[in-house]
Length: 433
Image 1: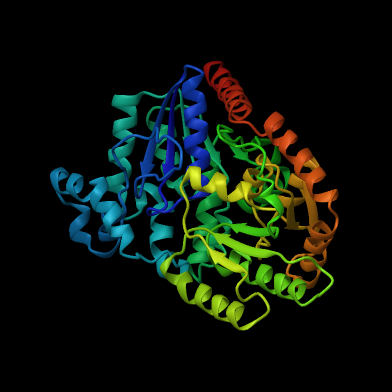
Image 2 (image 1 turned 90 degrees about the horizontal axis):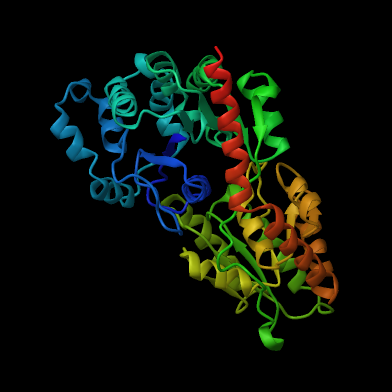
């Protein structure tokens, strides 16, 4: 089967959606399927072997210029190709281009308008390439922000269209008026051209079915699968103080401040064993003051001398980091749609403490790998972390159960099998029409 998988680059950072898309494409390729993983906006960045195409469509520079200046909606192909050069896109992304929804409302709406938007030229370049060079049996969009592509693809050469749902509501809900209302209306309008949606858990499938105003039966749950090479049992630490860890984008939405507050509460309890807090993840320009304020607070308080920031990690570093932890937590403020770092922690036998909202209750129910705490409640988070720190049997047992469940169920091979089965069923329906 020939599959065109259209993925959105994340401006040079490791992104959960990019990692998911690349892992799925690689697993499908291993099964012998013809997969073309197509980056949009910027090149993909993954901590595994990158299987994406070297060419970028809807390059971020072209998209921006065509939104701001009508002249660039008519520029020649040679200039567009130069502006879509991957090195140039990565360089531009490294300069701290804004991803603030308040700055991108008009562009978001324009992209969702498809042929009626300012990026019409880019849309036709991608559609023409798919039709003439790739000729896919299925087109898979990595998130609903790409739904502006769907009407043209459906009308011009008609393969089944699949769209993943991967947390885009977090961005959309921060759009201001009138862009928010326009974007929501366009999403629901363009969703009519999609044959099937895919969510990674039941929570998000139900939430986005209502959000997009589509039949829940069109939203299929295919749980994320990990490339488990290298993931295994965590270190014993040889009597060193246990480490509570965080691995995610450094921003308030991910709840690092809640984890810091919870660890401060634990550090104030003299009856608890000594522990450390280690943090890792991509630090965007708009997150630097947030982290700086937290680190100043840490150094002035009871966590002083017990904290370390590891920065952004590659795959080998990430696995070593996770295997050094006794407990993992990402106490997100918003309702998490994926929870991939928590699954990676569990893959290494690390028990997790997660807020009881979004995808996290399902992860805990399906793996038995940790505890749930009340969302936005640092004191309850501290209580659950303390429960694992003070019970020498509970944490390792939860870690063992979580590791077993992830290695049996949350695999890239199983994810590829279920996705391919969906593709085949959709192609069967199309061929019978």
